[in-house]
Image (cartoon, rainbow, N blue to C red; front, side, top):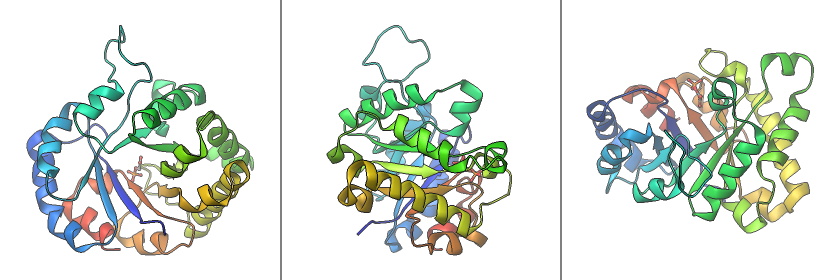
Length: 248
Ligand code: PGA
């Protein structure tokens, strides 16, 4: 039985005060829902938002981490630092990291492996660009990003991971994949996981959809058989919108 996860990705937004107010505003709705809810805030806010979510049931997530243990990596954050901030989740390989900051499948893989070794749950993002979709390369891109991203991950570890299918063309654009497109891509990913790890892993691992999820499309997305939740950007910044999604 996969418990749905709705994770807010705040990206480079909100202050300590604004984030705390947001957590306070969504808390009652989170208490009433059966789904798991997480907020992934900028690393500098992890201490502040960690305090805000204490005793709320809301999980804490980071948006990135480095794969090395420690050392001369100016500007980077290690897994141990995230553990000290008591994070549950870390987003890895978001398309903005891949496309703006040049993250490769190999880097994503090193981060995934490191996070799992530290018992931080990675939310590994994969997804095709518009050009790739139009060239009918969606499945081959998903296949490559998936296989490269989870190289060396054991079945026991894989079960605990979260994967987010985020078509790049749907992120922050207001264009959502249709529920059929999202369900089809996520079904494909689950099938590939079954081939790699067997059905026990593919049936336990949660796969989210992300890309312009809003209160008015959350129900049809969340009701799709293959979709285990949502990674929400823009709509996670406003309490009413995020509550609307949680209560899909
Ligand atoms: P969006 O972002 O909901 O604003 O499209 C989703 C994401 O980038 O995770």
